[in-house]
Image (cartoon, rainbow, N blue to C red; front, side):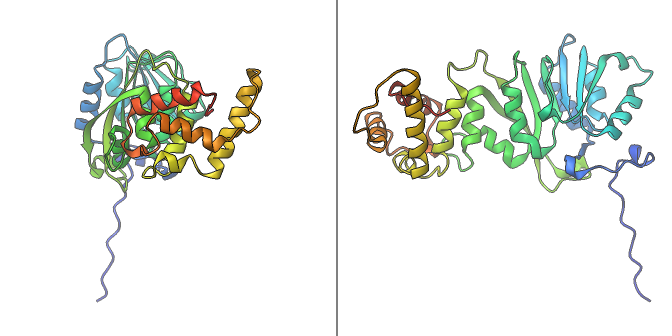
Length: 306
C-alpha cells in the first residue's frame, strides 16, 4: 500500500490560530514563546516602577504583559493591525489596559515618544536602521535590550581585529556601549526562524562624543569599503577623490578661503595621511580613537565628509 503522507503540523501560535491569524514572514514575525527567555530579557533591563518602556513588534503580547507587570507604562509599536487587535483583547478589562499605549505603523517611519527603556524581539530585517534610529533619538533612553540575528549581534559587539569587525561595529560603539547578554536558539520562537539569535544590551553614551556623526559616518564609509586595504589605497580611488575635492571646494566657498592655483587633492590627502601615520593603517584594526584623530586631522585642513 502507498504511504500516506502525514499532515504537516501547523507552526501557527495556538492562541491566535483560533482567530485565523497566520504570522507574516514579510514583517519578520517570529513570536518569542519561551517564558524563561522573556523573563531573562526583562530582568536584564532592570525596569523601575516609574519607567516608560518602548516595545517594538509586541506580537501577541507574551513579553508585553510581563513588562506591564513592572513598568509604569508600555508603548508598543506594531505594524500588523491583526496583532494589535489581539494585544488589545489580551489586556482588555485588566489593570494593565490603562498602562498600555499602542502605536500602529512602521517604527522606522514613526516619530518615537519619550521612553526610558526599549525591550524588544525586533523584526531582523530592520535591525541596522532601527539601532541608529534609537541611538540618535532624543532625549536619551537609559538602555535597550534587543533580540537580533546572531551574526548581526556579533558584529555589534566586535572589536578591532575581529573577523566580524565592520563599519556597523565602530559606528554603534561610538554612540553606545554594547554587550552580548545571551544566545537564543531557533526553537524558542514560533514559527522558528532560519537563523540563531542573540540578545544585546545597548547603553547610549550620555553625553555623546563631541563629534559630527554625519562626518564620522562619511569617513568610516570610505575606510570600510575595503576594510583590509590600507587607508592610503582607499583614499586613492577616483570616486573618493572627486567627492573629497567637491566637499573641499564647498568648504572654501562658504568660508571665503582662496583655493591655491595648483591645488592637487590627491597630494593633499596623501600628506594628511602621512603626517598622521595613517597611510598604512587598515580599517579592520582601527579603533574609535584612531578614526577620531584622523577625522580631526582632515577637518583641520578643510576636508569634510558630510
